[in-house]
Length: 406
Image (cartoon, rainbow, N blue to C red):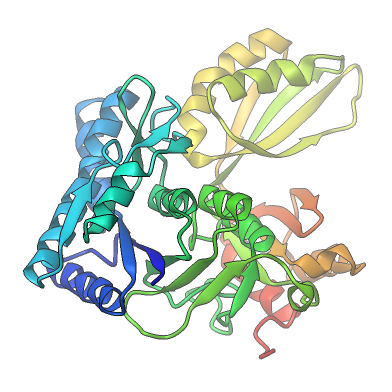
């Protein structure tokens, strides 16, 4: 007997018929003699609807209350899934985040899990129940409801799998696995059978929507094997695991684009020690995540500092802009959200020279100008105009031969 954690996303539980389909899939695993913990997202569109209700009442609603509001979406899904399972004769019990003892910090709207106390979940499993946990949510040290950010149910599932030492964490979604690029953008994209944690982490951070980045971080830290697969097909999906020699032989594993990036430029910054700290410390305190950072060569004692943030953090960024200008003696802060970050990722980039140069040439040949560049051992990212996003993905995907069978 094995322990399965099965997470179902919003499209998987998007209607009563689909919830019944989820119940049948869970029942099939249960019938094979396995214990099952189910983690569910809100029904598709429900989180946006709830967010809209709050924002219709206030342009800046209290984040604590927004967490209370949007967490109700997963509560509905968990209860309905249990009702469907019980109707099939399968004992099931739903647990909300605080009932499953998913403990988090107190950063509302994008809290981080600090601990999972799995005693109640384990007792329910021992009593013969399928345990259905409301994803995306937890509880801080003061008992407040918190949410984990978009895609947070993935993180809930992996955290529970790690705490319970589950044999596998299955992430069910509306695609059949991890692809070399978004199939909706790149028709030649193909599904990969296996991908390592490091590559998946980079792809998730760079805009791939298959898994939330923190879920991959947790899986890598606790060696939780993830199986990404389709709710609507019995086909094998993609295993996300540790690296091996076969994975390292692939130079570029995938191409992705992040359409939620925004470029921020702090102009005429004094070129002196402590200025960068003076800019980025307030951003860190406001939980604004910064990615690419470029500082121009100083002239006449001043320089421009450019970096990227998520569009989800733009309001926080705007709130801080005037204070930053005064604090560091800059002339202004400009924000440009008409950009996209396109990236290539692959373990093989560690040991192959010329990969970045090839990427730059492929983009140049299409007349696509690069506004900023960032690199790591296994990825290269370029900031370009948003209108070129899909063209760039297709050009890079085909240019690196990712559509070819391996």
